[in-house]
Image (cartoon, one colour):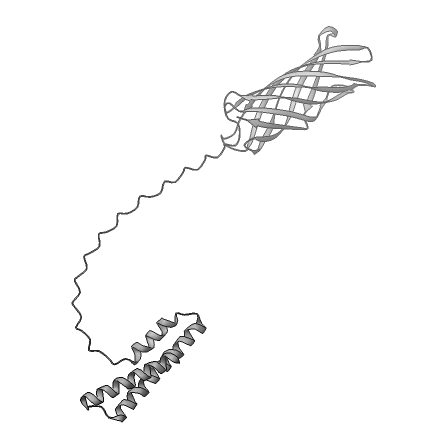
Amino acid sequence: MRTLSIALLALAVTGCETTSGTGRKTAAERAAEIERYREQKAAEEAARKQAIAEGRDPDQAAAAVTAETAPATPETPATPETPATPATPATPAAPAAVAPAAPALPVGPRAGLFGLRASLLGSSLGTGESAGSTSTVGLRYFFTEAVAVDADAGFVFASVGETSISGLALGLGLNAYGGASGKALRPFFRLEGAMNQVGAANASTTVVSLSAGGGLEYWVAPQLSVSTSLLLGLATVPNADTLAIGTVRPGLGVTLYTE
């Protein structure tokens, strides 16, 4: 308000000087000018307060009010714009390189495959009243996609009549696989030979067997398979001239493979 009073005083003095020098403005004209000036300053002050309340710049708000109330100035003819230079087409970006996806591991037999295997709850039925069971662990290696060899060791328990015998077994086996390459379920032909050292009480003997048959192996994953088979075998005791015929039925074979 102090600024407004000083401005009004200056305008009144200026008006008086103009009137006394030229005699062109009347008292009514000077009063009208003072009233317009007072209204402009009041509008600027109101704009400042509103800008402060809204968080805006008060000086910019006051300048906007001044521009609205100031007398219009004749506009200068606009200078014709210079035509814009056509923009140079952008060079297309090179397509981003896509990393090739890792090939999926094949399922089923494949050359160079190595495995750790176990046969659990296997059983055998012989002639007469003889029967037995065996569990083994061993190694398997694939020479080709269709041929694998096994080396096994296990524990044997058998009964002949009322006599029970037990011992250790060592065996070698050969699997020949059929079916289409890459299939998870593969049939196979098996040939195996084993040597068992068994005994009862203080007596022990060696039993040699040869078996042949077939089975199925299913690859649950590229590195894991389960299998079962049915074999027909011949067993003999070399020092007793004994020959027996029986079947061998492994309960479940499980093989864990590594490349």
